[in-house]
Image (cartoon, rainbow, N blue to C red; front, side, top):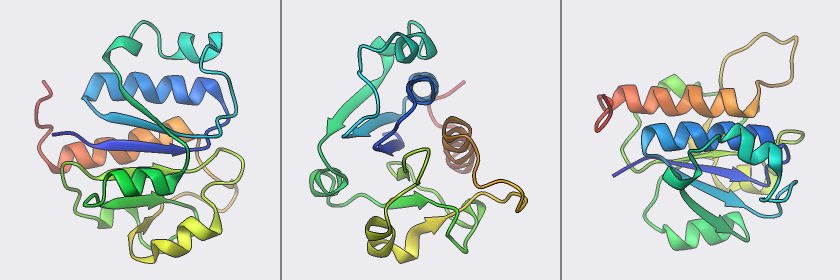
Length: 154
């Protein structure tokens, strides 16, 4: 039992490395959807994940649809600045998929249109476009973990 973080076409290796470390520390699955904006042998990626890569439950996918097809019964919650509902308005459930888009553009309009009822946003001022991807993923993940009582974590 664990949450899943899905990164759709991530571009910055340090963000993915930071998220991988968070996943390793929490028992969260990490799903990387191609194309990736970096090589998985990238030094920055490995450095950001430190020596925790062996503890990451990692899957690669060729499309977001592939993730949905493999996990047909999963609940997919999509982070976007275009959502009306805050992430704190959701009742998270173990095994939820927390989906994040690429750093420069977020999730595609097509993906967002397929999930109008599960879009969530993090509150922020209007002075910035978005939060850092690794920060946003950690914030949402830890809210989900808090809601389920940090099961399996000490």
